[in-house]
Length: 349
Image 1 (tube, rainbow, N blue to C red):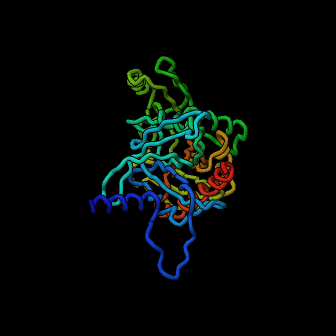
Image 2 (cartoon, one colour):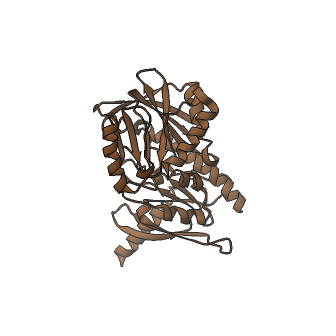
Image 3 (spheres, rainbow, N blue to C red):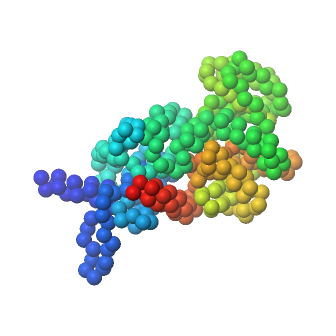
């Protein structure tokens, strides 16, 4: 019974913060009312400890304490109701405590921060995203924009629009889309790069040397049942990543060390470089997509032949952070969340 009580106190401390008595002579601001629940979807090797990131944080204008629940897409089940219900969205989350034990907790999220991809090579969590959308849960980025980023051609269509609008100020790698192998006929330059379906992080991507190899690839595409894009291969001197978190910008240069043409995979050397007006323009335009992106990154490649830089893709809220800058960037993300919560909580009161 004593052990059960200790475990329960540990669990309550994990969920609601340290409940220990303040030291004598130290004033502590009293927090009243139900806690403001922030659900954070973030697991994996690069995941941050968001309970630590938000430790001591306050929502301006509110005396309610903050509660951070962090887990992965695999660990949640979502139920949602319409405006007729007082509890528009309920989430059952499987969380891991400091002692290694797991427990399922039921929460009504006031806000959700999504730092993991909704779709991966082997998983598709869109049904859980739909539940959060159905319940109109406030989020970072917006749930609508996260939904749009589930399919690369939708994002590419917006980049094509920006390229047409801004011409040389927003150079995009020329790309063609094919809905299936039946419509696949590549007529651009070789070597070429083909990308199958919604896969990312280097998966589903091949370099094709000539039209004969392309025919072989087409036969493989036929058995996948997926769409495909194709573009001319650019011999890159290095890659670029332009990062925007709120009003904070960073620019990185990435050079492959392993020698692979996929510089975003395996081993590469990254260094922070000066943020130019051109890079800032790219990030600002990208951040306007789908009603606005609070977190986004623009990936580009420096063409070794013509010396120009071409935009390859835009990533959203699940964008990885440079490990050396992760602590500072997480602080910027925290301030964005607190700012949005201030608006949300004041509107609800």
